[in-house]
Image (cartoon, rainbow, N blue to C red; front, side, top):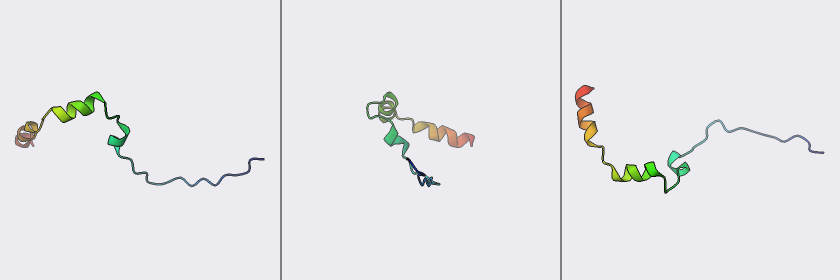
Length: 47
């Protein structure tokens, strides 16, 4: 007999998305090589 299992779901789950992406991912490498900080200066003028 299996019986009943007491299941209590967690209301909040803490997940870091970078932990889910493999270290050899193309976009992770692109992010480390590509510097897009100059865009923030252009954006300030528009906002």
